[in-house]
Length: 139
Image (cartoon, rainbow, N blue to C red; front, side, top):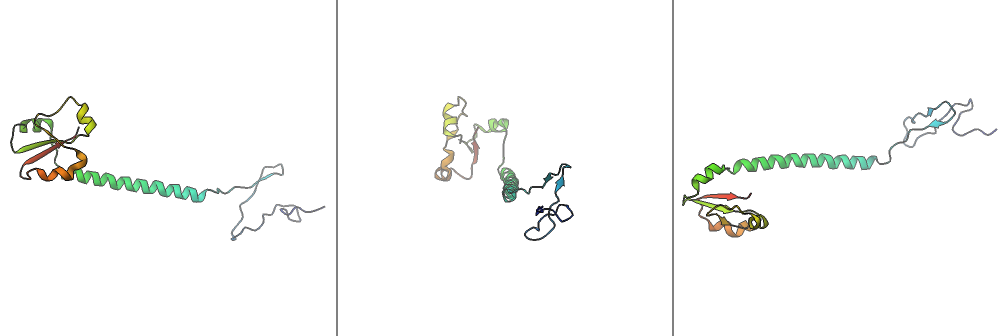
């Protein structure tokens, strides 16, 4: 009778040595002579890569949220009521910087506002007197 290479002489199950050493995973006997060996996931590097992407995205979003909050504090905001009090003030310039499609389709426009393309700020920003209050609105 030939001996199964996975059993010892007394019939107990013996796992072959593992490359790299360390204890071999234990086989689970189902009681019917069939052994279930645990399988190690082959996609561990893929899982690590996915977690790295998730962590980087979370960190990036956190930094972006902090950056946008810091930027919004640097630009003063005003309410509609505050703006309506300034409409006839010659020291105030109101610029409508809505996207072109929004501006064209909107029936609502502020009287006296100057339309400027928001994508070309560099070309028109120097045209306005820095001593005046410049109000930009976009939606």
